[in-house]
Image 1 (cartoon, rainbow, N blue to C red):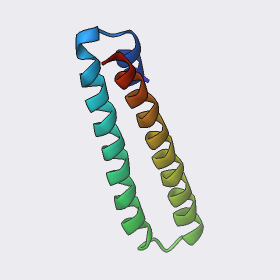
Image 2 (cartoon, rainbow, N blue to C red; image 1 turned 90 degrees about the vertical axis):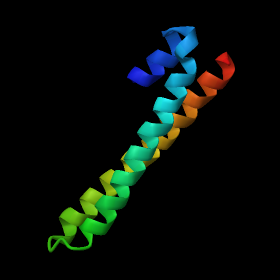
Image 3 (tube, rainbow, N blue to C red; image 1 turned 90 degrees about the horizontal axis):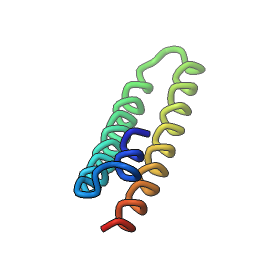
Image 4 (tube, rainbow, N blue to C red; image 1 turned 180 degrees about the vertical axis):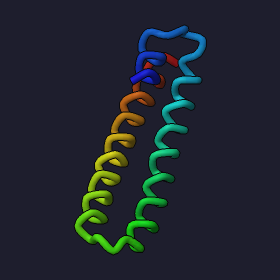
Length: 78
């Protein structure tokens, strides 16, 4: 939300920084998701593991969608 606001109403000279922030945030979420996936394999509670994996997938999809939205906004301002 902060990155979107930065791209939308922040300093016009830093709009590219908002784009970079969106790329970094998406990368961080996807990287964390990889860690969740590898560690979920070791959990004995398979129901909990499934729940965690589902949540990680939702977070990943949300990060990808938000990044796409922010990059489109940034591209429109460049």
